[in-house]
Image (cartoon, rainbow, N blue to C red; front, side, top):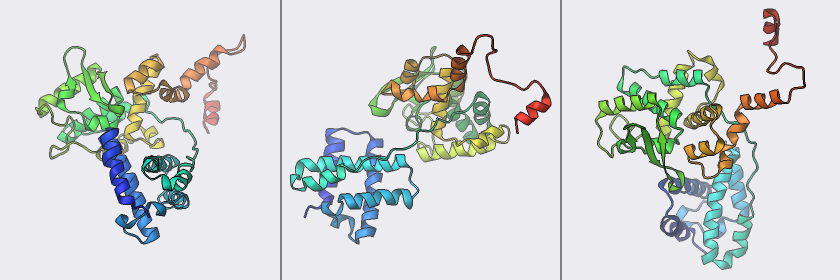
Length: 329
């Protein structure tokens, strides 16, 4: 019988942190995945986490765990596949030290990822983005912080993890203002700031007078915000902005939606996909192609170019107010 605890400990300390030098976010994601697995295993087997064996986590058990994630916790297919990826990484690591469990390990590694639908990305129009940025109350400290955060997120397209980890030293407001950050995959990149974002950040820093390594967007006690805190900020101000911009009520807006909004603004301004991929810090340009599918105006221009000779291009608009009313029903 092979104890699971030393394998799991070695996987984190030796493999992730030692050999791969995984980022803090990656380690946290794996930690959460295995913490949930151990809770489920304890409930199903009656064994404490330190009493679990590798043999307890066979393919049948892992399959039931993945089904439980979707059925009982309402996890999406993407989340289910992410949990499976963490389990696969652990079992691949164990296969080198425990060849006597090769059959059990191969059965677990053979569990396939589930295919999911690919939805068109959600992004904000210019009107919606303006309403969201103006939603926070600028007469309060928290409102000014939130306005600056939302504007920077939409202008730069930074990931929420990059925003919360940004310090005052990462802001460069000389001519040609930009932000610097260390993003996903430990890639360093710089992102230029527009005139409005630069002025807003300059005013925010003048008000805060922070130390160089202090969080750029701190919480009330000076600590850096968490990703959940940013999600709550976005949700709160979306609710407020919906009063002036009702179309926001039809969209599910998360911090990542602001990143999509930045990408779509660049695309609709005629910026090529390769430049947008560099701007967002994408590893592969194919990741950026999702924005091509979301741009209806791009598809309309393609349709206009293929219109039959002698016909008018563009979308049909009813010539009469009554017809327009009926068309909108």
